[in-house]
Image (tube, rainbow, N blue to C red; front, side, top):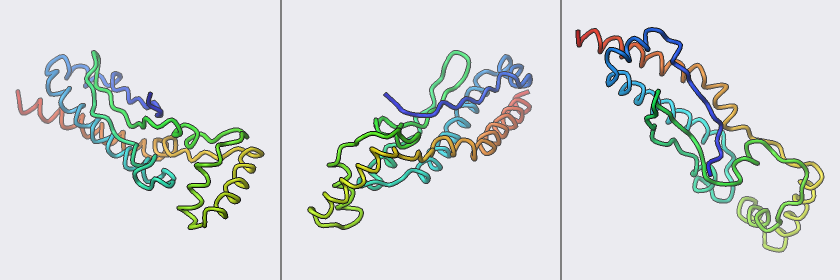
Length: 172
């Protein structure tokens, strides 16, 4: 199961796009596919830059976030930036107070803080108790990426519309 933020760019309201699709569906589909792929890769990079790095480094949560190849659906093209790691949602949204498992925090303290095993165990327990009292703050890497990158994504699709018009003019 993927944990991701569902972002939709609805281009159905663009009358010119609808007319273009009726006239040259292969051009429209090809350009929207390319724009979706470009937007997905842009969003992937931005989400990864905002993702906290744990003990796995780039191979952990950050490395698991990827743009999926756009898929063609009946009435358009769909793209996705997601991860299959279960802990992505709590990192994104934060958590309510709860007692987390101490061992992963202990590993984190040993590797990230360079602590000796016994010291890491004590630090991990203290961190776990704090999480049990206060929960965790969310990183909101998906949410903030879309909010801050929405204009760029819209621009990518705007450029696709311009390319569609140009290609159709050439074909006439």
